[in-house]
Image (cartoon, rainbow, N blue to C red; front, side):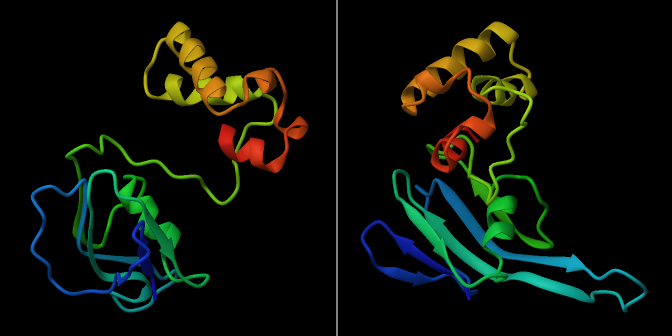
Amino acid sequence: MLTLHRRTGAAKDAGGGPGAPSAGAAIEVDDLSVMYSARGSGPAGSGTLAVAGMTFEVEPGESVVILGPSGCGKSTLLKVMAGLLEPSSGSVAVGNGAERIGFVFQSDALMPWRTAVQNVELAVLLRGGAPREARDSARELMDELGLADACDRYPAELSGGMRKRVS
């Protein structure tokens, strides 16, 4: 079972149940379910239910930690919230101060042939940004992350923590 831990330290069960959406919510997850299809010729609707009937809200400025055992749907939930995966049912609304959702994957997924700053530039380029904008944004972000001295290093030359920050 997934559990949400909020900045106040209070835990809230993230299980199903309808809830009246807050007008001020930055992120609103409403009755979200995700079913991964079974391979082969199983009956319709068969597969793995990764997330079931999840409903919760995150207020602007609130920090939330998603906890649970391996295989309970944490990464699936984050992928749906970030728009990388379509839910089977339910909805996710992002707004009111949350322009987009980002998260760090379990593996850093850096391209080993690109320097740290080139890996950061790639995110801007893939969103349609101009090369100069990508270069300027990447260098600024590397500085904010305390990695200005590591811009020209390759992923193999970075510590694990540095690789996570670059990714």
